[in-house]
Image 1 (cartoon, rainbow, N blue to C red):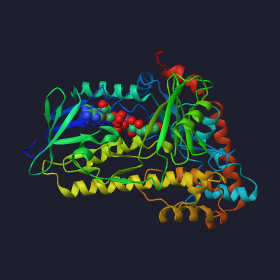
Image 2: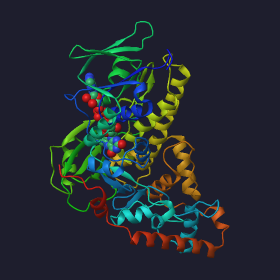
Image 3: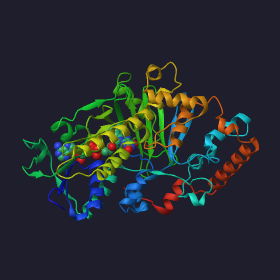
Image 4: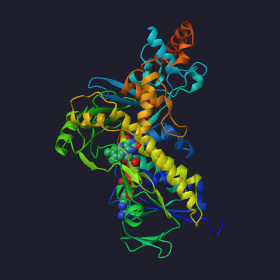
Length: 502
Ligand code: FAD
């Protein structure tokens, strides 16, 4: 440590964002850094946010978390993808499965070979070649690595978990590594008169806490980044107009599915997230098209089991802080911005924000170049995710419903318009190397929303038809073979990570 090194970090907020940041920072800096977290039990946490994407396994590995213990502690289940019901048309359904679909031939991506097979009548549905999809649809799960599933890439998975239990789990880890937790409500934020950096916060007890670097994880209110530092908010309601949600847990009324369900409704969509002790449900909707009473009724009419609590309304403004990092404060989680949970990206954005902060970790001089780069990369990450979410809404076939008609007619970004046009013509998927969603993700959602490409790609046309036939036959056979010996999802959980009843 030098005189200019950051010596103390104060994290404000003890939700998913606060405790993820605390656990990772403590794991990284150990006891060489003074890390304190202030949270207020009286204010509480948002308590939703229960579906994740596979990248969460990287943070678990970094933190040395035993996966079975983690699932037991959070009443968790496994997630192989998201089933979208009624998005392309009212009856249709498709899975955005994690992991690879099929296997390319040389430089020719698999989906071009599949499209060629469709033309020749040799191919089934694209998803017949996805191990994740086959497992999901059979309610099965196992940890299968690429080595055990050659030439397929194994089973790729994430988790569903109880958000409150997840925060508790991370808190135990972080406190074990030396993070100090202070209970209390922050009532004032004091700035340094010269630098305008945050100097300290004052709690309702009168206690004052100062630090070199502040991490704002205070939720939608953005206590430090917005209320104190006025970083500004870029409103994306125009692109993603849903602005309300109502959430309610219910009892299981069927099998514990190893995937999230996202079912389109007349002015939004409903999530269903299976955990061990209950199912999490919520209805995300646009208040210009639906009242809270109606949204609640739609939600309660579509539960798979008995409601276990009163429905809880939530309001949000889609968008992000104009500066995610401003002066000596970095906002993470809901304090940094919010996009609806259609692709379960918020917890991932916390994770990538922490990782970016570590890469660009400052000294006390807070070099502007580091801050600018952090803000540039974060903004770009938000924009890529926004385009992906907009695709689900824009390319809908729900004619005659005002909300969906408006979404179809709404102009999308030039980048997204180009991507859709390229795919529709001959299945080209254009994505940049550093965006979150893989080619496989874009493929499945483009196909699910836009339908099959009009033409076969020239590279696939150059492959002899017998070779296409053979490749499709071998891959489908391999998927069938592996899928047929997978245990049920509940059976797997019972054998490895069954939680105690709460
Ligand atoms: P919060 O949970 O709101 O925590 C804020 C913390 O700040 C609390 O500890 C609070 O006590 C503290 N605090 C605030 N003010 C003060 C003060 N004055 N003094 C002291 N402490 C204070 N994400 C996903 O990845 N997957 C999903 O499926 C998903 N679903 C979602 C559904 C909905 C409807 C919503 C709204 C969000 C969803 N999210 C999802 C997002 C996810 O919930 C959040 O990213 C995650 O919970 C992080 O929240 P947070 O920690 O930023 O804020």
